[in-house]
Image 1 (cartoon, rainbow over the protein chains, first blue to last red):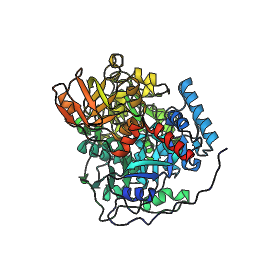
Image 2: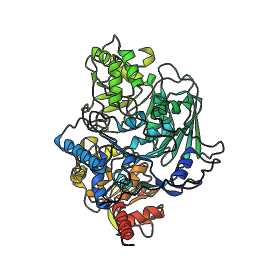
Image 3: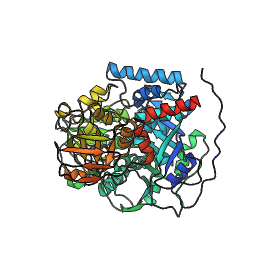
Image 4: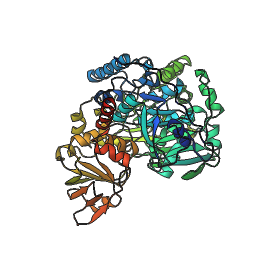
Length: 434
Length: 169
């Protein structure tokens, strides 16, 4: 029988507060060093490991490693999000294997179907991640969680198994790329338009292996829901993590957890491998055209493109603020004939809030479809996939061929404003004219 | 571990995403045969049938970008692809492949020098690739900690060995 011995909390040397970026400070702390430098390989103690259905795939390597028990069930969060509710018997069985594992391992923070959410949103809204945390998630959009001032990186199944066994992960300390944003956006223009602009300008691998840190007055003024959008799509820049300094807004966002708040930011004299400055003064809505997130056009250049489907969902843009935007535009309007508009909230908590605020009724009156929270449509898994040659405008994050269904479907990525305006008009529409 | 490979090449361009490699609709299983059968279906539905064990992939920049789905390298490894050589790799794909003991090599300049059907020779120990013209290209050496995982045959065998040593010690 396994023995449980309470381990003393590791003693951390004081973290150097000069010349380090946020990500360097966090990796120094996680690897018990005073400081670390880009390029260095460190073994980091994981503060939070979170997983979705990839856990099912990680079970085989985990069992093979042979530790039997996870390193610390209190540092693990699991939910189901990719296939909710399960569309096939095989997936229902996969969910069973995850449920059984969590019960046997004593993982209390298992959020089953009914209490679920897209995992990144669930982690954020329940306050499971905090500034200074080394957060590891079994999904590429784990980057989103860096908006609270954590180092949050995505991994695959075998790494997930290794973290479950050891509580550690080797990481190459990334160079930090600064993306400084200033200026006031045009009306009905959002963080989604900003990040599409950044990706379209720098390229879909401009930040490969790097940490991206957003700074500047525009970022500082963004509420948390918009900050999440920025960090979320650093994945589409190839970044290891996306980060924003933890400030008063972060503190207020996490206040409900009662957890002690420790702010974090990069030192004044920290070294950035590169700095991109974006002046977004007066910038309007942007659209990423098929079939690469970096294939950017201002909305004016694609206006009038006929659509078959509009989708508002995913970890990128399906928070309550996004649903309020959809409702604002849909009130008293109808979805264009022949167009299906699907709205899928990012979590059950958001679903309930949308009900309370009467948004769901607005969606239904307008002829939109409102579903339970799932990643399904975003990755072409289930619950709203695209047929060949269908044209879709989507608030999601990727549009590579076949991403949302048929490889010949055409996916345009845009903000909730642009997606909803387009759903009403049946063609890509500048929301400022809607 | 095997360090010399000779094989037929399949070439791909830049920004090959995990959606290209294995579509989301096939992920609702844990059976690697399913992933293998549908590999690169969005690009060429006949591809998986035409691949032979021992073939290699040569691609451009940012290979494997997109999702964290380990089913992507699993699909290619299951088909018998022995190595992937690309101008660069997306970070999660790179880790996933190495963790499976699947050699992924960054070799700038190789993509322009080969076409599908060419035979190439890869020598992991000496760090070079021989292309049909006879030219030898040096590839970027893997960092020591990554090489250690690869030499152990993947992360799981490496951790198993470590755990056994610990128990014995």
